[in-house]
Length: 312
Image 1 (cartoon, rainbow, N blue to C red):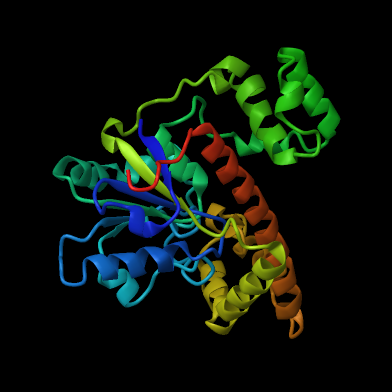
Image 2: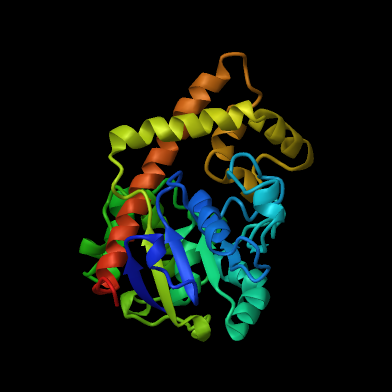
């Protein structure tokens, strides 16, 4: 497993080993990564391997809504993690790692710098810290829980182990479903899940420098930035992209259930006044996601220990 060293400025990175850029959606991770690579390696073909750890950009055809690098941002660099799955596939963290492991391990073995960038912190954590116990959730089984109130789901977990009382909130339906799948369907214990046992997916990862972007941006300033980003996606032809996807895939395909695409598909076909309403709905979803991502990053930073002192 890798060990994390948090830095406050990308210039603190030595340019060797692994750098992970984390941050809420729309915080500028990709643009920051590419600007730094261009600055440090302007004529060097041995630039870092760029690893997209984004659960939307991993799908082929989901280009606009994922803010996937395109044009020279894509062609001028070595990327992995992009376009590795069909829209019809569900990509777990384990499957993601399996698909990027070859070139990632080759770079680790050769000493080539690696830059992790993207919005799926679950993928990032699996790469750096190793995989958590448990298989992917059975979505049909999760769907069977819909009639059960949140309080009952939590009570069933607490009946297994009293520590669930403080671990999950009764209003957090997603985690209640996921933990129910792990504990009740898969038979894992609280200690199995939170006792610190993680598989060493990449023992060569070593020391990983981590830079968090966007945590200091106040929500009042963050929302307009995201709104402009979403509006530009529609101006770039997001509706046309989704229309082409719906001609080839069912609306319930895993790729079309990702953030942003799900809202458009649920409102399909678009009416003349649809875009403004969809922009608002997608913005709301992204702001909720960003809040969760900020909480995750801050918790990870606390658990990772002290930052590296300046000048070290």
